[in-house]
Image (cartoon, rainbow, N blue to C red; front, side, top):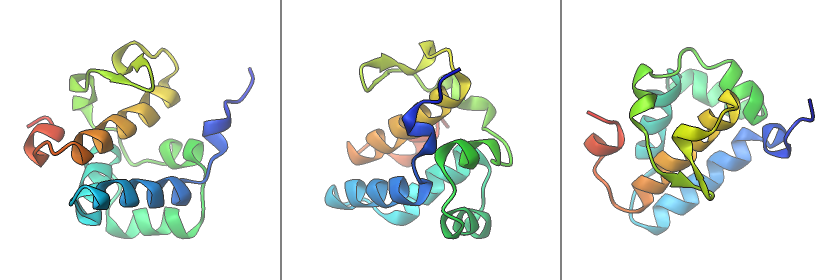
Length: 116
């Protein structure tokens, strides 16, 4: 199976882009972190360790403590694909994170983003 290029991208680079994107819209790094904690089960220290180790996206998601069981509530289109229809599990997880960050940048409340 051919590895998709996005899997090998550095999580720390993507993380920096997420921060830039939401800060332009008046949101915060702490909100991005809260989304990542909710989705992946990382905490502040373990997230920072992943950033410092410059892991790629594949490793970041494979080493995630646990993927939130409510991810099935994340619906919609991201990058031209319906997230709930993406068959590859890793790609679906990456797009879940993209979708949540997009919702944050678009001004949704954290309660709605975290599917509470």
